Length: 237
Image: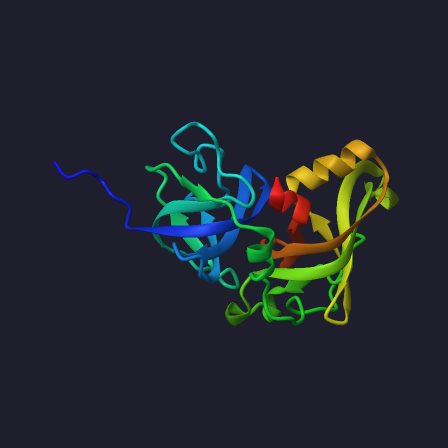
């Protein structure tokens, strides 16, 4: 009897391991055994939310894939949807495999060409330039960007004070390519750190930020989020 094998394996640098309902949104760039960097890829599961569960991202030794790991992921087939052309369906019969970690210098070389973060001019929920209407979503634009920022400010504050929702959430403000953005932060480690500090603004300098354009929401918009923030310190840990 022939041992089962995945259809193919993707090797990526995990540039986002972000919070998502029912699991995580994993995203990264392909990297070969010679450290040559390729296109973006977003591994997705077969569940309706496409979220990656803890079991999905488990290594054979019991640990789970982490932010900035170099990972080999068994896959079934590409599953592009609308603007999320990077989506690839994982084969959940197999463990993922840890292959190493990139250096800060390697990460800096992975940034995308400068330009607008998709269509701008559409804002909601106390944010700025944070959503794109369905009619302006374009497959050729993709849904993931890695950008260098001199400065980003994380705001821990009430989710919707005008409506009485005083639970703290974290938003991120930054300027990029001539535009100002204020987006929800879905980086779970930095989010927890800010929430533990409490209400306030927290500045980070000289970072790389992974910006993700999420799946189309029921209100007819796709929302931009800061899926991760990479600092030299986090890259070295």
